[in-house]
Length: 330
Image 1 (cartoon, rainbow, N blue to C red):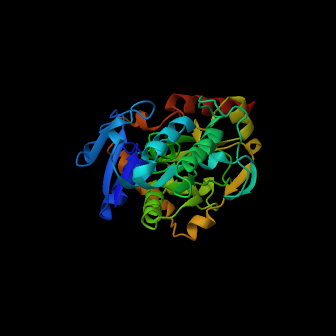
Image 2 (image 1 turned 120 degrees about the horizontal axis):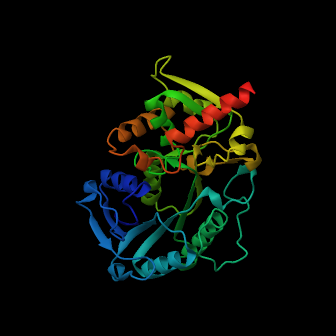
Image 3 (image 1 turned 135 degrees about the vertical axis):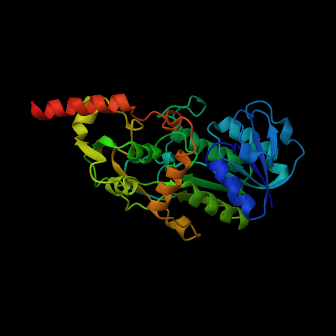
């Protein structure tokens, strides 16, 4: 097959390129040309801007297009409408953030966020999920019956520059006193980017359409993650300093970003069901494999700070530990 990827040079797109090429498919990338990747030099790259310059796509034909970077409905609609006459299927990478409720099990039939202002294009934490849902609709409107919508949860793995999981792998490598939330039993859902890329490739090959959640095992806990990340470390090389949720909130530690994977109880407890995707062949690698892949990637990164996103700096972490000790002794 000939497959066009919109985006494709940073995270999920890179792994999709690998999965597709390993199965003998021809891949073309369309992006702004801002991120240059040495390992993607042998792939056809088309440059332009999704919001105004799609000329490089005019007249070209592909069996499928995978949209990894659609956030604004108008822009997704422009791409899908232009490609509709010359592309068999449109695969849109959405998000579980489209779901409205904060409690319970979310499957593909669960209520989604409906924005009161459907014309807004400002991407914030409040509008992100609703915009993603409108993007889904824009793709379906342009290519009715020919769209595969995938709603992943937190995607983790090598080449993730957000730090939303790799923070803990990196933190294990430095050791010492480690600030951790007292939340060992908190459920943590995430999906290895390699598992997601392989499954998307399966779905493209099967010409599947429809809506699918694609998240990880809901039985993994925060404690499981810490155990996997710190596996192999010797006693004395690190010490967990467990702090309460109240302390973290009082000191304005941003959940999920500054302290990755941790979410306050007030955020609710919802599970994203991927049963439909599992029935279509979605498989999960071992947690230890995910950690080891990230660990190996981090060894190749020249500046660790650039791949840790907005997570705690070493200075901020130690400052919080000192404040916790004072509060415990007062």
